[in-house]
Image (cartoon, rainbow over all chains, first blue to last red; front, side, top):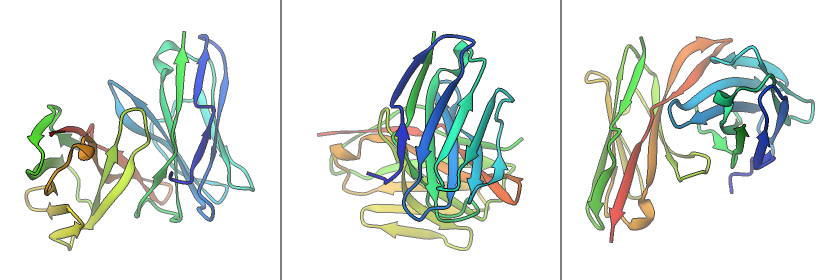
Amino acid sequence: DSGVTQTPKHLITATGQRVTLRCSPRSGDLSVYWYQQSLDQGLQFLIQYYNGEERAKGNILERFSAQQFPDLHSELNLSSLELGDSALYFCASSSQPGTVGEQYFGPGTRLTVT
Amino acid sequence: SQKIEQNSEALNIQEGKTATLTCNYTNYSPAYLQWYRQDPGRGPVFLLLIRENEKEKRKERLKVTFDTTLKQSLFHITASQPADSATYLCALPGALSGGSYIPTFGRGTSLIVHP
């Protein structure tokens, strides 16, 4: 158990809809990272927050947004969903502001868009 | 463009043998490299980090080497066990964004250890 929690575990929704994925980092970790993993793309970095502030941004679609709240939990919002958004979404946390050092990954949310 | 290559073919070995996985990269000059283990449907688990000034790093049955001239890292598991069967990912700091490097992962190599 990494200490990172993600909810929900599974999500099935229709195209065009909007969903929110939630992540609670390990106790004491200030950095939260979001990743998308699909069979054809591998593990892709989306965005990082450190202590409430956006830190690094990957190839995150404009339809996707995230935030980190004062209690350090984070939410990833996915809107106008398309079939291609079906994937595993992972959250990871670390104590570092940068990306050196280990990241602790959560169990993931499996999103299925029908 | 930057690229990380890991063998897409699964590596099958017998229990007790040493497994060696390769991570090659191009158009990077990483200050460090990481290896993660991922089981099906689960999040990656950090194993080892090796810095550019370290040639080799060990942790229990794991050994990682980092050759910045060859642009290659080798990941070894000695005395492999069926429980070591998983996908192993290497990760590098990629492009710089907002003061942090974007974590960039290889596609991973599946290791299958047969009893």
